[in-house]
Image 1: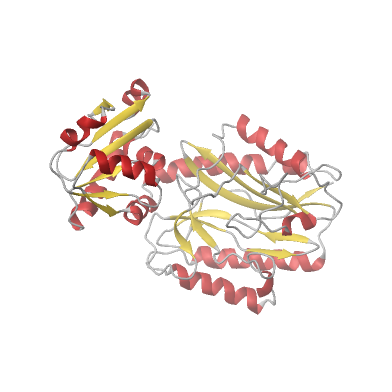
Image 2 (image 1 turned 30 degrees about the vertical axis):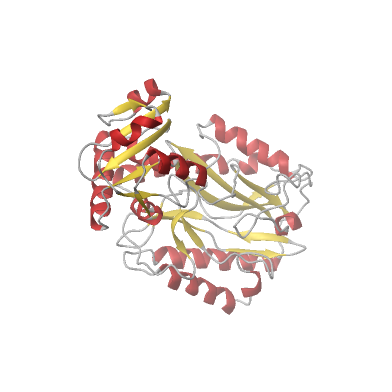
Length: 389
């Protein structure tokens, strides 16, 4: 469980940030933000005043919330007519507009008439982006779990297996190792399973997910990830997987093959690794995310692979790395427009990838923490190609 000192540190940071914006408090309703501040992911709402103790108002389960959260005021959710008295006089209150549905906002607007609501979405996300030493320890443990399972791929990968067979094998091994399931995604209408197992041209299939490689999935209702296509000899097999322990996510991509990769794919793999390593070394406090994306793009162009960088021609993702932690899609993002300097303790997944229509996808991905000496790599597994018989 989250230590009381962790929750206290986070509360102090949020209180300071709200006061700097002349807000009198915040209403925290999104599940992961609640988990971060309270240590519990029960069905609840958090009234967080700048002055005084926060109140966690629990719909279900009150018993478990009290056992898991170090907060002193963990209360049953009151009738809506009593909410105004509980909150009291504050008139300027923060709310995460990016994650709270309009209907929920309207409920609280009626319960707290006269309140001026201010969007604090990015404020909360930026606070969450800097991980404490305790959080980094959790993420290292998650990375160790993921590394251990991906290392087993050569023992079961073989030609003739379908993508979905490889995916199922990885999923059951991850679950047995203690993986908590699918990562939480903040983006509206974005979904992700445990990961992607894609072979050959299947990896170049377009889809809705905001990533460079998506796969065709199993149907129009689930157009992401492994398909029923069999894995051929010498086909590149891209394995992009996540793992979660204690809520904290790590993200990793490795390449595998039954046989040998074509020379041009091996060359692209070397370029992807070189881009990753250069970006990782540049993950220092003060580095500008948009400049790191530009650097990666420059290296891809110089290698003659710019039209395949981060997606198939005409459908390329405009990022090369993303923040990660309690959610898969945190800030910062190594992308154009992200100009706020990096801070020590931020965690990012760097994933340079190339897509070759008709042949497949090539890439690498690891999770790093921003540090004074360059990015601290959290994933211990070698980046080398995983070769099966």
